[in-house]
Image 1: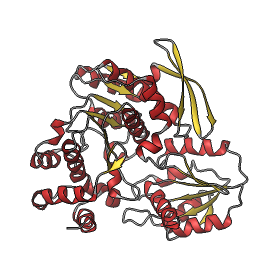
Image 2: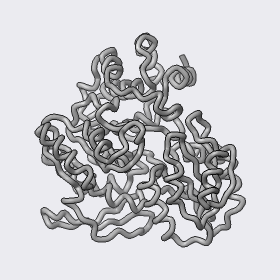
Image 3: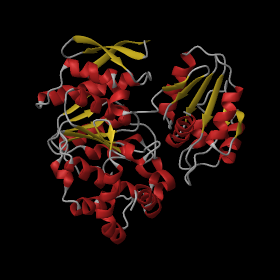
Image 4: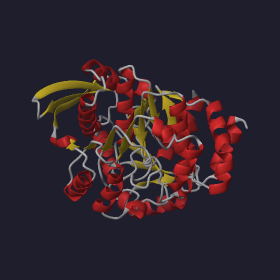
Length: 435
């Protein structure tokens, strides 16, 4: 098969959550175990860091990867979903898996795929582990897909488990309380393996502590160790002054991911690095500084308060739940601008009415949908939004919405694109074709 034929097979043959939602979710690990067994159990040959959380797990994964790269380690990174090309999910030192490798790994698995009918995510996880093992990486940074306990990535035994935070998302699958969601995320905590929790919440703290105790795992709450003194934007960097409250030392970090919400993620990263250093990983202050100032270059991360264009300013952010969106809106509101234009769309399993209530009223909206079955039809989104007092029009495609927003916006306006990974994907694709 060619690479394109392989992608067609993977996308058409396998149920994929990002396209069809809950119907693709497999609530056990058996298929992943069988797929990895077929590939010689590559997961047992890897040293890993496992990262879960409602928001921030992608940013933390990329930051950790960049720091390990700066330290000279051959660093693997598995994330999801992808924005443009499937190969974005599987990288080593920021370089995507080769097309030929995707083809050969898929062909190895086809007989078993036909027999057990796994999900798309289960296959890609097994493929990533096999590729990383074949390439003999020093460390693999593994981001969970959904939840933790029953997530396909949860067959690894990591060096460290990280849970960034807990808020409401995927409640139809993970539970409708923070305690239930925390229990699912806590499923990545392994026996005698240290765990870092990014944020302390009354509803989830006991869940994490109980799980850590039952697994005899040392637990660290990053926000109980580190405090932010100041965070300012300077020369395309977010400059963060942060103090370790235990050791009483302060450092200033220049981070090239400029979303204000990264100040919480940086606490998680620093707490994790302290534990990894104590376990023998050589990660110097210089590696930290170099890695965090070059996350975009080293890993290729996109969609974290990215300024994609100026005059007018186009900002893209993958925020897609209430907690994430509120932070993005707060930061946009602080930026100098005349008018705000928002291009947005959602998938069908979101609590859209609840989310739309937090969107700013003083903005012009371009309601649209990504090119995928799971997308909420733009007509329905427009109707719901208008009833809630948001002013705008619906557009059948993201490209049409972007074209109209660019036509409407003045040079001192802001166009914000947010609400779904897949809306952003279509915007990036449009700009890639334009350039």
